[in-house]
Structure formats: structure tokens, C-alpha cells
Length: 119
Image 1 (cartoon, rainbow, N blue to C red):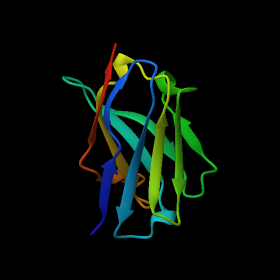
Image 2 (image 1 turned 45 degrees about the vertical axis):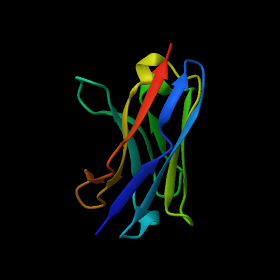
Image 3 (image 1 turned 90 degrees about the horizontal axis):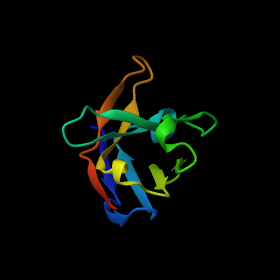
Image 4 (image 1 turned 180 degrees about the horizontal axis):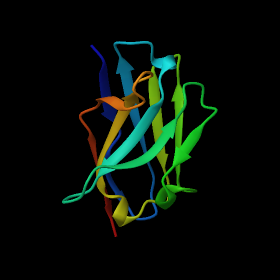
């Protein structure tokens, strides 16, 4: 059974930084694309960033480009999201997810970690 456990969320001031981590277990971590998503209150869950199995391919949503950095350590089965220059609109529950090789859909999700940015 795949498990994804996020950590590192919390309260930050605008302009500050937070680093999220997502520890994975249950299947060969290095084989899968990993993604970060977020859901703000009253809004749909949206894509934030993704990284290929070896880090060669990385994608970001436009609103976080230049501020957020996704990375992974396959030896530690962990994916990270470094968030700098935080804005109040970054406030959301952040989820990591693992994408199926066959369906190319994100089929496993963590429980989420709250990020709150104060102005």
C-alpha cells in the first residue's frame, strides 16, 4: 500500500519561506512522477509543480514560477517543495501525489499539510 506523508507546513509571513517534504513508501519511489497540488478554502485543488523520476523534467504553475522549487531525493524516497517569497494567496492545504505509470493519472495522495501566509 502506497503512503505519502507531507510535513513542513505552518504559518509564515508574506515574503517568508517554508519547505514542504513528502515521504513516500509502498512502491519504488524512483519510478514515479511526483507532484504537488494545493487547495485554497472554497476552491478546487490545483496543480503546483511536478518532477519526473530522475528530475530531468520539472513543471510549475505560472503563479509559483521563480518562487517555488520542487526537488526529490530518491535515496530518501522524498520529494520537496521549497517555497520562497510567499504571498497570502499561497495559503492552502498542500498535497503531494504520485502519478501512475500506466494511466498517467495521480493515483495516490497524501493527507495534506496546511500552509498559511499572513500579510
